[in-house]
Amino acid sequence: MVSAEDTCGLDLDVQIQRLPREPPEQPASALTAAWSRCSLCTSARKASGRDEEMEGQVPIKLISLEGPFERRGLRAWDVMWNSSFAELNGRELTIHDVFEDERTLLAHVVLSEHFEVQRISPTEWCLAPPSDLSPPSRELQFTWQARDEFCADRWVEALRNVCQPDAPLAAGENSEGKEEDEEKDEAVGLLAPDPMLLSALLSPGLLGFVALDPKAFKVMVYMWSQIAEILSGAAAITPDTDERREAKLSLEQSGRPFRAAKTYFEACLLGDDDVELHKYLEASHAFAGVLALMGSWTAPLAKEGYKNGDMINSRIDQAPASCRAMLQKEVDEEIHGPGGRLSEPSGATGILWTYRGLSLWLELWRRAAIPSMWEGAPPTDLLKASFNHAYCKTTKRYHGWVMETGVSVATTLIPNWEKVWPNFAASPAELEQDVREWCEVMDRLMPRFAAMISEFDMDDVRKTY
Image (cartoon, rainbow, N blue to C red; front, side, top):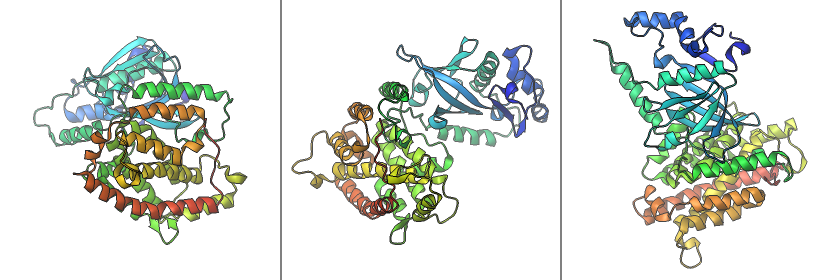
């Protein structure tokens, strides 16, 4: 096991073994020096018959590096450093923002030779994206800062190695594995990073704060900096596990997403008054496909949905998992305060905020896809008007002035309805039919949550900022 002093908060893994090492005399070759001492890498080079060609360079597949760092945007108004955590596995780079010891997914991208690592100072560097500035690339436009020069050397060398072109296959070498890797890279590459525009919009993490709390200033600056990020068009919904990706894509690529969503949510109904939570989480993850088709402006809200789902998942360990049983267990454990003052993280907090989030989308789609829900003719800015109506009816009451202002800005990013509805059906009539059927299922599901929240006194009405 490598000590914290040796790793500077980072872990370097090759295959499954930990690398024993000391800081080298020349930090610039830290990663190469560690690899050259690794018997597994040496064996791999000799087995491939390319020992001389690969001397001092580990195969990209075997590169695995992770650890904390600080990041700051490149714009003039980006003055604050944000705590973050990065994981590099081969070409796959995953970055989480860290706020109050909680990680929130920021980006998941696949690197290539089109990226360039630029050293700025002994402890700082940038990962310059491709010139086309595709969505998965834009989110990486920030300065990295390591704890010390040694850590920075390791990150820079690792990133430069994975940003190299693939080595040509040796004569007679099997290309099947390489093709599989390319297919995987292509699939992951479709997952654009998802910057947090309104990360606190539906966040239970801000419950209980008061307007004059010293943390409010940091939260406010962070939220507005992310609003500026989304104005660049770099947001997208990025699930962080294969299971979530598959669920999201199952709706996103179905052709008629609301028909698929109906099936998912109908499966989570348990008995006459309960909800099966494993299937509910699966349905919620799949519903991210609907949000993705609505546009990048939904990405921060989808991210909060994942966060709330994780709180639920951490409290269930059996199948089937009863929502009623989980809430009753938390009541018996006395982890919540009186009058609906919920502790966080908890299963109840996850249930409450996924319920509120789904209520928002349910009310929005009733208005957007079913013209008869409006008195008179539907408004010309149908999607924006539907969102405003749904927000006022479902979640606005739980937001303070900071969040309300953020939402007002976010509504300016909502696209025209005519650009959105063709993603869901072949015609408006077909979409209306699918949404009506989905609403019928949701009208059976949502009252169950409302009844249990009321029964167990878990309706936390405290406002966010």
